[in-house]
Length: 267
Picture (cartoon, rainbow, N blue to C red):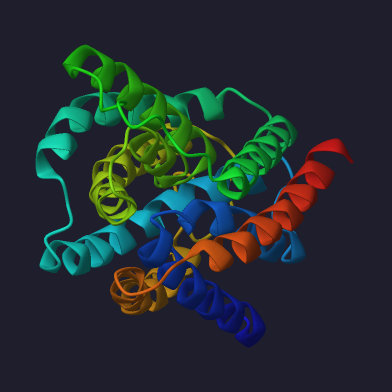
C-alpha cells in the first residue's frame, strides 16, 4: 500500500474514532466519503467504490463501537434496558440494509448518502427541544424504530447514532445517556451489516484485490487501529464538555462531505 494512502487512512481513523466517542455519531458519516475519495484516487472501479466504502465503514464501526462502549460503560451511562429492546430489530434491519444496497448502482448509493448526511447535519444544527412529557415508546414502537435504524445504518454504512441519538433525546433521554446507548447499539448494527456485506459481496464479480466481499481489508485494518485508540478519548471528553459549538463545526463539515457524495452520484 502507498505511504500516502496509509497515512490518510490512519488520520481518518484518528479523527473518526474521536468523533464517534464524543458524539455517538461520526463513524460512517466521515469514513464513507473519505474512503470513497481515497479509493477513487487509486482507480477503484466506479461501479463498486461506494459499496466498498460503505461496507468497510461498517467493519470499522464493529471495532470502534466496542472501544467507545467500554469507555461509556465505565461512566454508567449506557441504558442497557433500552439496548435490549432495540437489539432484535436492529440485527434484522442491519442485515437487510446491505442487501438493499447491493441492488442499487453506486451512483444511486452516493446520491442517497449525500442527501441523508445533509438531513443529519440539518437535524444537528436545529437542536430542537422535545416536549417535557415525551418518553420512549412501548416495545412495539421500539422494535419499529430499531428496524428503521438498522436498515438505514446498513444501507449508508453508519453506526446508527445519526438516528438513535436524535430519537432518544427527542424522547427526553439525557444527551450523555443517548450518546452512550448509541455506542452500544453500534455493535449489533456493525456485526449484522458486516456479515451481510461479506455474504452479498462474495457474489459480486470483479472486486479488486484486498477485498473480502465488499470489505476492503487494508482500510479496515488501518482505520480501525487508529479509531479504537481515540474513541475512548472522545467518550471521556463527551462527559465533561458542552458539545454545542462542536456540533456546529461538525454539521458544516458534513455539508461539505454531502456535496462531494452528491457530485459523485450526479457526474
